[in-house]
Length: 239
Image 1 (tube, rainbow, N blue to C red):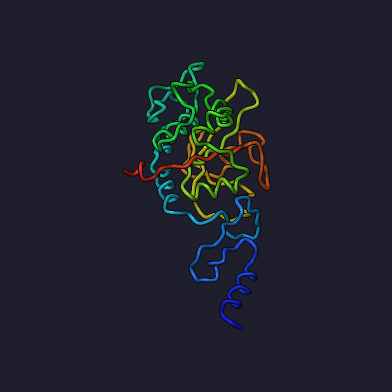
Image 2: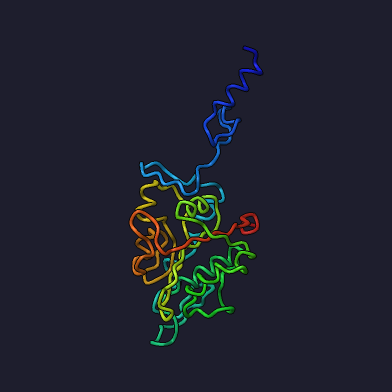
């Protein structure tokens, strides 16, 4: 068999979804679908890239574990406490202020003061993310938690958010963390997130972080929490 015929036959035998250059060791492999639903304990959602590591360090260094604290009025940009909250004086938790501040520091616009006050800002952010304005700003909706984890692992800013069905009560917003995670763990508890709230956390599962919002995360995956992603220019951020 001549060499040209051999190579042609070999390329036809590649598995569906693989590139021809996969026959060469170390060559690029077609990525798994973002909504990979494996439950065999294998890691999902692609490797954490260099930009993903930048995002992980950014979230770890955000200070949300000791800033944007509940029951204080805070400077939304820095999370610094201004004074204890008084009944009726404004929001007592600051998930949306933290998300807005983090996005600002990454060069990304997410609805924030002064365009909207801190009171009920999370609900407003959820609605805004589905507007043409948000799409024109670079935000895109993601289909599920697997897509959200994949994008975070690539270094994109990924917001997990739920609107409260009671317009007089706050929704919730968190930022998806990059990291290795098994498919079954992701389906069970959702991605790990960084958030402010009644209890601020550098790393907590979405199921735990959103547990006071009934139906935000359902066992086995899904729920009312939605995901949106925005690319980050890490060269500009780190310059």
